[in-house]
Structure formats: C-alpha cells, structure tokens
Amino acid sequence: MSFLTVGTVAFDAIETPFDKVDKIIGGSATYICTAASYFYKNQQMVSVIGSDFPKESIQDFQNRGIDTSGLDVKEGEKSFFWSGKYHNDMNSRDTLITDLNVLADFNPVLPDSYQSPEYVMLGNIDPALQNKVLDQIPNRPKLVMLDTMNFWMDIAMDELKKVLKRIDVLTINDSEARQLTGEYSLVRAAKKVAEMGPKYLIIKKGEHGALLFDNQNNVFFAPALPLEEVFDPTGAGDTFAGGLMGYLANSGDVSFDNMKRGIIYGSTMASFCVEKFGPNRLFELTDEEIHNRVQEFVNLVQVDITLT
Amino acid sequence: MSFLTVGTVAFDAIETPFDKVDKIIGGSATYICTAASYFYKNQQMVSVIGSDFPKESIQDFQNRGIDTSGLDVKEGEKSFFWSGKYHNDMNSRDTLITDLNVLADFNPVLPDSYQSPEYVMLGNIDPALQNKVLDQIPNRPKLVMLDTMNFWMDIAMDELKKVLKRIDVLTINDSEARQLTGEYSLVRAAKKVAEMGPKYLIIKKGEHGALLFDNQNNVFFAPALPLEEVFDPTGAGDTFAGGLMGYLANSGDVSFDNMKRGIIYGSTMASFCVEKFGPNRLFELTDEEIHNRVQEFVNLVQVDITLT
Image (cartoon, rainbow over the protein chains, first blue to last red):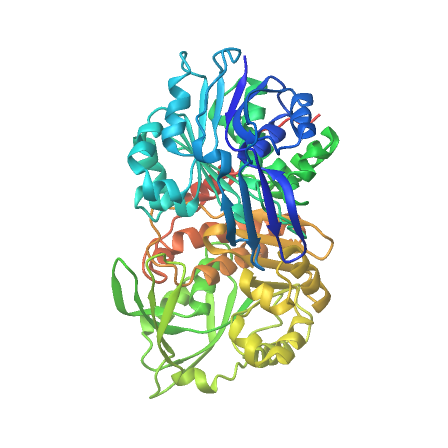
C-alpha cells in the first residue's frame, strides 16, 4: 500500500508584514508530503525540479519515508520559482513573480517502481496533467483527492470537469466552490459538486475553518484555531491536505467519520505551518506537539448540552 | 428575578436579492426579547415608539411574558424607521433610509415597577444612554451584556470605554473587535478587551460562526449552520444575543461552560431568524424545532477522536 502525491517542488520568496525571505523551498508536493510524513511513511512523490534544488532537501524527503524516484531532475535547468507579498490582513496576497522554469514542460510520469498507489493526492496543477496521472494508474485507487483553483476554472473548465468524474475528494476554497457551481450557498454548491463526481467536498475557509460535505447530505464543520499570530500562511492549504491524506492512508478508513478525524489532523498541521516561514515549522514537529494541538481543536468546540 | 432589555423598537423596509417588504416591525429590542421569550418569561423592555406602532404587536410582546411598562409611546409621533438593501452575497448591505423620529430624543427611563433586574441586555444604542441605564440600577446585576458597533467607536469612543468598565459581556463583530483594540489578531484583541473591563467577549462572525473568549485565556468556537438559503439576515445578531441571554437568565448560571451552551442556543435562534423576513420566523417557532436545531449544531462539529 502506498500514498502518491503529484504536485510542485519549488523555491519561494515570501514577504509578510513581519519579515521576508528571499529563497525557501516550497511547492505543493513539499508541503503535502512533509505534513503527511508524520502519519504515513510509504510515500511516493512525482514532481519536477532543476539542478539548482538542494540535494539535502531531497535527502530530507527520503529520510521522511518519501520515495523520490518520480522527482524528475532537469540538469542545467532552474526550479519553479514563486514570489509573493502578503497584505496586512494576511488573508490576501499579491503574486510578484512566477517563473515557471522546469514546470513549463512538466510531464508527470509514474516510475515503474511506483506500484499502483491506493491513496493519491493530485496537487493544484493543470487538470490535463491530473487526468494524465490517473491514466497511468491501472487499478482504481482507494481514495483520490484533488486540489485546484480559480485559474483552472477560468481556462480549463472542461478538462477540470473531466477529472472531477474520476476523483473522490475535491478540496477548494469557498469562492472557488461558488465559481465552480454558480451557487452562492455552500450547501447548494456542495450538491452540485456531488453531481459532478466527487463523493466528498472539502471547502477550505482559511481562518474560518473548513466544511466537509458528502453526497448524502451529511456535513461536518472543523474550526480553525484562533492564533495569536499568523506568521506566514504560505502552504497552509497543501499542509491541510497532506495531514488529512497521511492520516487516512495510515488508518486505511475512508468513511465520513474518519474523514472528520482526518480533517482535524489536517487543520492541526496547517495551524503549525503558519507559525514560521514556508515549511520550516513542519520540519521540526514532535508527536507530542501534534497530539496537544489536536486536543486544542477538540476542546475548542466542546460543549455539553443535554438534549432530552 | 428579571431580564431587562434596552434597545430599539421600530419599522424596517428590507430588500434582498429574493424579495422585499415595505414595512415590517423590527428594532434590536424586538429581536432580543422575542428570541429570549422561548427560554425566559419574566422580561422587561425599555424602548420608545410612536403612536403609529401597531397595538397588536405590543400585545404580542406582553403575551410572550415581556413587560412593556418601559415602552414609551410618543403620541402623534412616528417610530424609528430603517430601510436597507442587501447585496447578492447577503453579507453586506446599504442603508437607504434612517429616519430617527422618536429615537432622536430617546431617554431610557426604567419604570419604578421594574425592580432591579439581574440580567441586562444593552442593545446597540448611544453608549451615553447605555451608561444612563446602568445608573438607574441600584444593585449590580448578575450579568450585563452590551452590543455596540463601529459607528459609536467613531464618534463616542470615550463614552463607550466608560460603559465597557461596567459590563460583563461585550458582543461585537470581528471588524469591530479590530477597530476597538487596534489588533488584527482576534486572540490579541480579546486580551485587550479583557483589560477594558468585560469578563467575556463574543465575536460574531455571521456565516463564519462566533468566538467566545473569557479573561482567563479560555476560548470557545461555535459554528454557524451552513444553510441552503439565507432569506433575510436582518436582526440575526440581536436574535443571537436574545437567545443567549434568555438561556442564561433561565438557567441562572453565568459560568464559561454555560456561556458556551447559551451561545449554541443563540446561534440556533439566529439560524431561524434568517429564514424569513424580519422577525417573522421568530413568531412561530416550536420547542421541538428549537430542540432539533440545537441537535444539528451539536452534530455539526461532533468528531470522535481518541487521544491517548
């Protein structure tokens, strides 16, 4: 059994109202696989980097139980680079630079050594590539989760709708759910998404938490932890997905009840992610810290009401 | 023992993307007292209206256990009138008309028949009037809750800070919490509010739920129920406050744990309020509907995580 992630591995430059960093490793697959590594070891990564990407970071991935055979290193080329600046409210940001570099020709190929994975996380890339990944997996995985964004809805809606028919869990934010379905009400949006294919829809609302819908009108709400300081939100959504998928892969249970638990673990990992620049906080967590933070999430909504 | 509410009783004209109504009764005290009446009967109301206000509505208040001796009827004058139009997202609105009428000279006077109340709700009016109400209560009430808004922070901050020293619970929205304290982080804002006087701070976030902070670093989050349709959000905040205060007055318990329960009941009443125009939905609820809705709130965040 294994857990495959397809996404980006990159360099980021990030500026927040508090501080800035010129070059730090990032990319969706970096956050997803690192967060998942706290729960599940047998991971496979598919991405593309240039020869400028630090060997030690690849070694770190491997030390975390992540097979990097599918990490295509383009000799003499440069890794994907993104630069962004957060506004004072930390909820919105401007993209300053997007240098696709090796990502421009990204052609995800699953190595023969990657046996048919049971858990698949398709990070936010071109839906055509997401379809291409699924084409290479002969046996239907137990759970496929997909992340996407408004950009792909604008320019590749048909391809996106095609891949939505082939997945189990869609994770998007509230404005993307509204754009995808044309419904303002998230309850109605969830019903339309269910008709498009996915069994589960997770709507990420950042500092306002996350909603889980299934296709049987069940709904679950997970809060975000009120934090004294959000240092850098970069990668929080991918970290959420990674914590969730790692938890599910480890437990082998994709029921609605276990999705709820997974979302609390995903939210927990995301709450750590924002405490330092980039993925730095995710490199140093202890099981005890995670345990205590999960307890905080459980306590946050705990209320004893006796209904007779 | 009694529960006193001071606020407005008024007419509203409301336009939403779905429908409109030219004249419907409204005002903070209308929503607060009506919501509270499902939990607590010995209520007292202080407000001002013109002789145009329907006698049947006053009779309805009385039938709900609300003493209207403090409802000052100005013969030959007109009641406060507000008109507003909601945008498509239902989260923002434009005020079209504000005719203060009798409210311009509102001078809240507690009748002698109102014995010193134990629970006091100060609806969103001029902080100078809120102070004046407290001046008329000889014995310190068990719990005083206050609602206010950005408008009073703009023009009457000193008077507002004065009344904050005399109350137990402040209820405002997230942007008002930020304006009042100058802190973007709600956790930090809560600490500053605690220094201003209130033991409890409730931050209402509309469709994103509500946060409760006490002055001992305890925090509780109550979700909002994801609704298929929000018909008219008018009065939802006051309804929340009324449900909460009615629940607290009935139980006689103002501990943090009971505040949490009260907030679920307040959220429940607010979720009904938005289903019809104005307070209409609040006039027709059954105990069974309330019970079932509370259960929905409890289920919404229910997750079984075994932490060892």
